[in-house]
Length: 212
Image 1 (cartoon, rainbow, N blue to C red):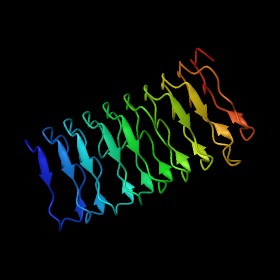
Image 2: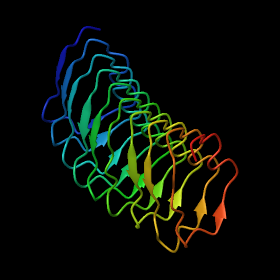
Image 3: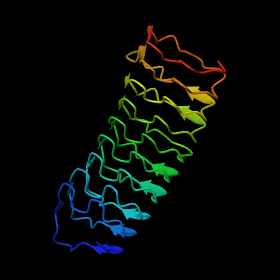
């Protein structure tokens, strides 16, 4: 389907699962503010999509909604979003910048997995949980600060981030485990300070970090 631009009527309140899946000619997307519900994979595989404006009143970024949107280079998450679901931006290989508001408390599984061009990520101060594989294969990331609000980080959350040279780990007393493969194959990492709140280091947590 050739739809270079989508004009969504102002009376539309929800967009369903797979609604515009693989509409490979779309370049510009403006979702009006009256939309409060966005379905799973609604715009996934729109591989020419370069510009997205999200509605201001959504609270969840749904699973795989922009997965494999290869041309998307930046995204701004509206303030008020609290949860970014599984693989929301996975394999957006052109994604360089992301703005995540302080309202976000949970990043789900694989949210930014495979975003190999992502240069920086400022994690919000109120973030509680980072899902498994959330940032794996983000090969352009060079520094990472896990805020002290974080109490849980899943397996392989930052594995294969081969450009990472600087990491600051949450010092929250409730965060006490470095999960399995959490930083595996971070091949540029030369040093890391493990804070006193950590009580357990999981299997393969730093496996293949050849400069450590």
